[in-house]
Length: 120
Image (tube, rainbow, N blue to C red; front, side, top):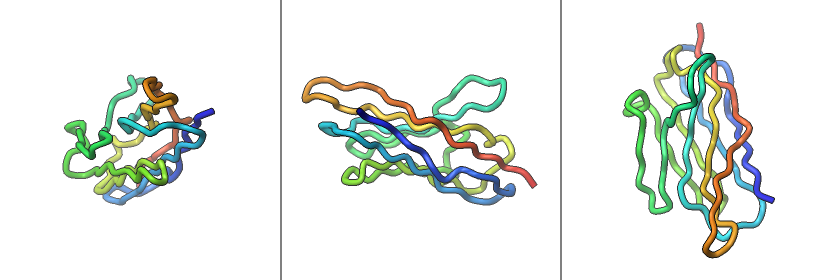
């Protein structure tokens, strides 16, 4: 059974940095897209950044220039390096992966979320 586990969240001052990690466990035939979403209180969950299996990346406008998504395919890990953090980045951050559970079948999986709080 596939599971995603995030780590790296916490409390940081404005202007600080955090690095989130998301590890996939369980058997698979590979991982297509990896992505990070976030959900602030009272708001809808939104896409922050996505990286394809080929390494192409997409970012929300709010993340461009400050956040960097990367992946380690051998370790089945997605990373989100967040710099110059702002109070408005405060949210629960979720990892999402499209995982090939069979040769021709893929499914989306979500992690449980990790809290990021940006405050002085």
